[in-house]
Length: 105
Image (cartoon, rainbow, N blue to C red):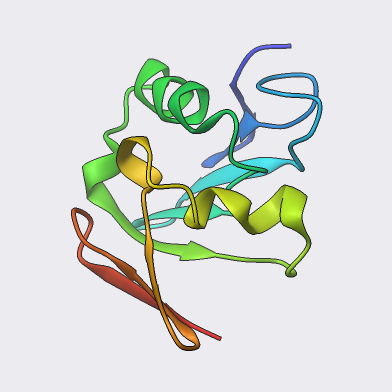
């Protein structure tokens, strides 16, 4: 399976059949802003970023990352100090340096 638009302005960019068998599904939404839904398990950050780029989008333009729930296969890429999804944890906040965003739980 390849990254693709599944319905207007909603794209699948990661998941067990696209990036890594350990990933939950990762979606990109284009609703006036770019939003990433979940991040995968962390082993395929570079593949997710490449998939976003292959669809014509730039991860630097993401306005936020939304997490559906806190299972490792949906959130762990936030903790990986790798690629453009590298995150820094501060108590209950995840701070994104390059994208300049904050996700509050």
